[in-house]
Image 1: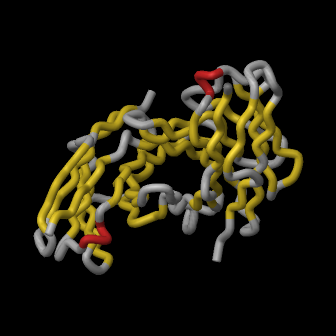
Image 2: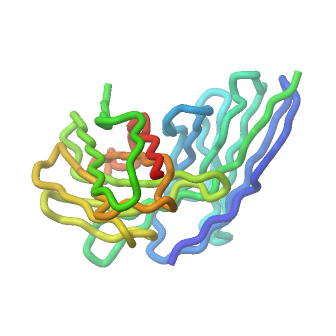
Length: 113
Length: 115
């Protein structure tokens, strides 16, 4: 089956940079996604990596190393509104051709002044 | 904008009741999912469906069933609700196309309390 590991909590200072790591175990790996969820809200998509390397979207970047089964989300110029939970999610391909997406437990990021 | 709509935001049900959670998406997505979210456990996949009338068990299907009679609608059924099914339930959908299926769109969630 699949398993993902990410830290449960991270605290960082406003304006700083924070990195949230995710390691995974799965067969038929297809890609790694990141989602953000504010308290009381629905998870929303941030980024997706299918190939090794860095993907940048504004202040957020996501990295993947398939050989290490490892990825991270990098948040730069942290703002108070970035306080939220961040989930990594593995998308894998099943024998029937369909895809299953499994989420990690989430990392609660607290940004402090 | 993609919209995933869950019929009930808050429900309180009694132990042993049959519970239906309804979900509708308006983007003609092939894939639909039901997750439950509990503190410290993240999002756990209950069931998913990649086509009408097709369903696959997720990681925690016990005590649940699903129905997908139409492409836009995916229902989660608790045959006999129990207190350990008190949780937030999230419905989601995604495109089945390789080029655009990377993004999962979530509904706002249904908070179910079983007493």
